[in-house]
Length: 429
Image (tube, rainbow, N blue to C red; front, side, top):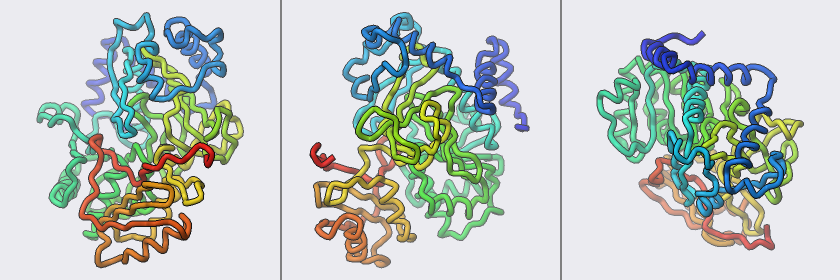
């Protein structure tokens, strides 16, 4: 049972005075996630709502889910007003903006119930892995503004700005985690953990020096070597969380398990083929397409996130698990013959270079690639990288290796290990 905190008690007390709306969402999420029931009634409800109140969907004769089109960020950007519910135009309670790390940022309007649903799912998914509402945590992100002492005290938060993770900052984080035994968990992008784990691991630290109960990783693929280092340093469960700004927590792994359990309570997730809108087969890499069951202000229906994953579920109409979430399709690179190589493929290939601090692989043209490596000079030879990559790219690959002292993160705080600047011709796809 989750340990109660004073902050948690106050939070639920305030919610009770407001009608227990967040508590009701929390209990509903818990009921669905811990049973075999579905939320298909809500799926039909959100589709009907969209077709009756949203200009874009009014043109469709049927509100049947399968008759509605798959949409992307570009659709939302190009026809933004058409995706807003007419009955919620003056009832926008909250706005969430994507980082634009893919070059296509946009803002999603949310009504009050959607915002409360999102808060409830964060509480639930934190709690099932050991982070109780109100417990102190360290949060790594690109902070637009410095948190005041009152804000940090109120939220029981230790903010860390990932735009500055130099040696001084890393040592400060390490020192804080050692001294402040009240810090129960950490939440960060996978790329931030890679930098942090490399730094602390080389210091020889062991779990008895820390007091963390759980580590949550989000946004991008958590490399296996990073996971292993975090476990050796902190000795606590490492939880992978698949989430985005547009929607919320879409899926999460459990302790000692790398299979993602889909948040079926709040979202309906499809895996579609890379080349069509037909369902991907079990075990086949597919596009993650999300329907948000609770945002009535701006219904997000059959939204192609640009992310890729595999599911072994036989029931393709009710996907409940995902594995091998491999990052965005636009981050995939290609060998010299036009065959796709996912970010996961490159990550596994780079695993043997254990002493690297950072690396980034960029495809500039059909046969021209750049590999940036931080921490390689004097340890690994450039020819070793070139010869190694030619085995997976093709002997005609031109691989330029650059030794660098730092590979900066994006303005969002995210970091891309693979970048594809080459637009592969359609006939090769």
